Image (cartoon, rainbow, N blue to C red; front, side, top):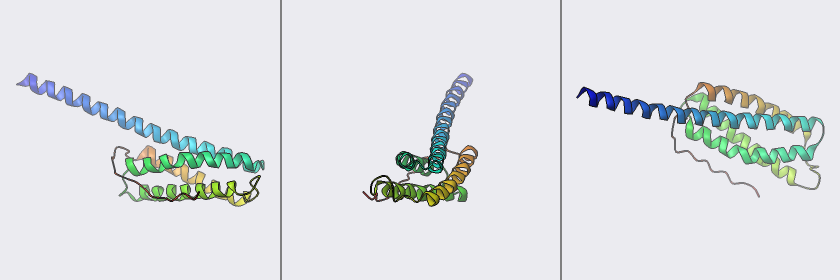
Length: 157
């Protein structure tokens, strides 16, 4: 009887250990994605300061491609009942909409002449601050939730 109990405790502890490794991997993926987005935003701001708008528009297209995974990871893996998490979820959705709008502006005309460099740089600076907050919250908060989350957004093509 004691051996059976000891064996079952040993098996259950290994299953729990495997679950924590999976959760650590998910948290690490989320942090790497936010870091990648943050670096790309910084590159875009540098390109705008150098007035290379075409390169900045290419970076915005890449950001627009990365952001849906980021929004889904926040919605699916974090506690949406927590006020700070809910706030960063809404911020990331607004940022996705912003990147879509900027991508559409970049596609207009030839040579990206419709892009307002000052407004874009100001918004990217605000997004950069938000990404720092998101990084802190992802490090601090639990990412073991398995929510059923989806968002609907009609992309303007």
